[in-house]
Image 1: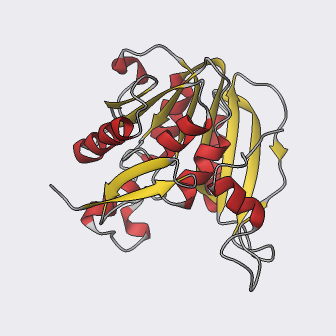
Image 2 (image 1 turned 180 degrees about the vertical axis):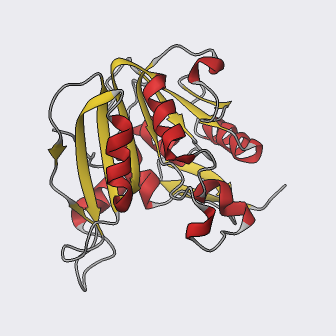
Length: 246
């Protein structure tokens, strides 16, 4: 079996076994989990859940919500299932084999109230130096960003929410892809420092929503010469605060 480490998320409330090499849950997964705003009794799906970092953090943040993770990589899926059991969440969290390249209807699941994902950041292998083999699936979207947005929008009921985190320079593509099925879009830029451009965006949309686009106040991660993260960001990472929507 490939080497794995056991890490702690949400100030120790989540135990996560993940590969020692390859994709590892980090800040993006933590922010995505904090942006999941499902209400008690609702059902949420994550596309590409990996070892379960965002999935489990979101579930611990939302104790009355049912979560389903979909993952195509067999090793990552096995880790996600082990992590669900490790955290004692089998009663309301599951991880299933699935691929965004396959129609959502092929999974045999009812539409969800919410869907979220941290899609691979690149879909053009010629646009960057090739990643290490163990990281390729996390970096390269073989079927393109359109497949991810299409899967998420198909996975939710009318009025359901779609939330994702991605590179800020793909915001135009994300908005164009959402326009066909979703509206009431809200965008929260994520800046490394207040005087630097955003590197990430959190985007939330409502299926068949009609409200105009909202650009929300930015989340700034660091102060120059300060601690590792701003206090409000540390509160999010510890699970003491959420990333709310307007």
